[in-house]
Image 1 (spheres, rainbow, N blue to C red):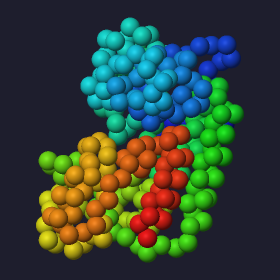
Image 2 (tube, one colour):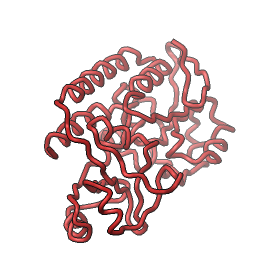
Image 3 (cartoon, rainbow, N blue to C red):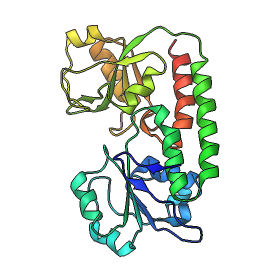
Image 4 (cartoon, one colour):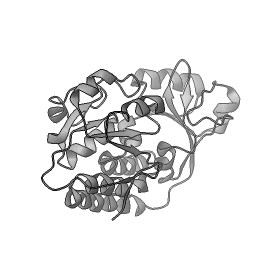
Length: 265
């Protein structure tokens, strides 16, 4: 199997007996690496890499996904860095590439990209069997979701931020997750992947439901109650990790999506 990342870089598998030193700047990837049994090789993570909590607690923090402590990472002497196109800034990655030999770039755009991600990281770090187990679990979860009876189409407004209000475009992992149950994300008149928008009566007429995500903005049931009174459309609080985290979390995410579809009928 050829190990090619999101920007076309071909990677070589770690030789048997070698002990790589991995820094992950992607929360969902950190969780995936742990689920692949690679936690002993993780030497750095972001402060947003919080799962699995009992495992990552022992892994040093190196800043956030954007505000990265370059000097601290240098002192950790990593052999591999795992990043994501959406979550990490290119100039930061380029600076880290000056002293980290192997940069693995990820960019899943749809749920179906996850098995390839499992196999890429499993192949590089000698965890192919665990990667295949995750692939099988993912396919079972996807098949269960696809076996649901047809559901009425819904146009939803998925909110990720407040002040300013922000949503997601169709060209996002979140939108493609929701599409699996026939929910189409309302599109702002903007080419941005995460555009701003303003509430209006016209907008309210275009949507069937509003989804408030628990991340990155921490929407709560109080926001749900207030917004329902404002817009007059059904408003639902949804687990942002389940709908936006790829990696091994996607297996649970598909099951969560299945329950969401059934509850919203």
